[in-house]
Image (cartoon, rainbow, N blue to C red; front, side):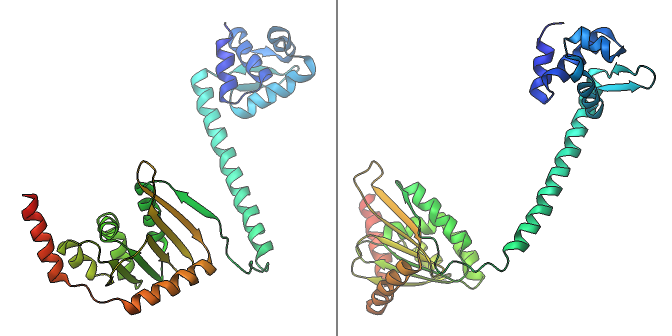
Length: 274
């Protein structure tokens, strides 16, 4: 028998001596521990431990007597038994992790929470990653969403996240959007958006700011990278308050959208494209 079977046995989790002892039994048949030690080149002090482990794992049947004898389980049955052994062992480990985890949770229940939230920043270097992060923030929000954005970005957000935004609105989340007037928004986008959020227009905005749940901030702006956009997100109570004050100032100076004008502009643009 080549070394290949032992290699596979080692890969599935047997020790070196266990693999040697089992392949020896496959060659010799029922044997004593001394015969296995001699035939598998397993040291005498280690052979009994290896055979006991093989019995526990389902590879060996033990015949009581003086001396005890060990018979190999057929490979198919051995693998089936070993799989069940590993499954039981895994379930026991999971149960132990759960038990210790509950004890850990109980031990820290009275620990005071930090005074402020983490303010780690993440940077996103293209539009796709920015939209993915906005989707993540939208899915996890439960109180408010505020946007300061451009017509093109507003259209992208509605196209990508309208379902998630609709679920938020149905759950009672307040959604407000300030959209700059340096471009048009298709009437269909306005119609759909107006069902789930309050929309206002301002003359112009520099960059795009998205605010979520009194703490999460994502700022996006044009850049000279290949995609042309960079986004920075953070969880910061302080930055949220600062950007929220800016939002409130812009909201106070904004006005409702002139949807009729946008329709006319969109139709004219379509005629020009034709």
